[in-house]
Image (cartoon, rainbow, N blue to C red; front, side):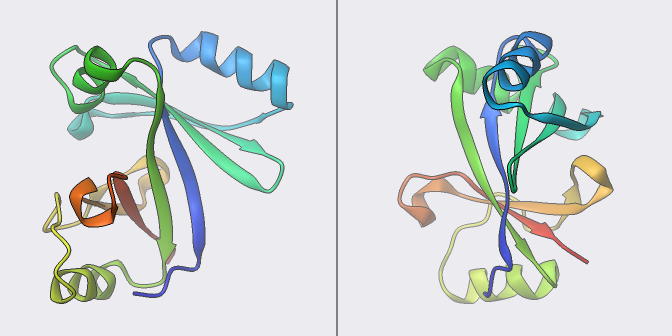
Length: 134
């Protein structure tokens, strides 16, 4: 799989508005997008920081992946997302390379883009998201 680059870094937070204020104050982050990802049980805010993007994630309920992450580990780095040209082809390549996928089929992510997650055990402990870049 050839990644075009890092699409974003995902950060799990308890309070989305407080996190947005922090990133704006400390890093002059520019608001890009806010939305609900019901399937994933999160509300997300994307901010641009320099040439990169950070996705702040707050759970809609405690019994969601991000809610459980926060209960176990507290706020912090949640995942790294790589952009690919063809998500279907990338998932096929990852599978044939022996990587365990959390999502066998793409789902909708922020901005309406197709995404899929790779199990952290396949990537040295890092939850990894693959994002279709179109």
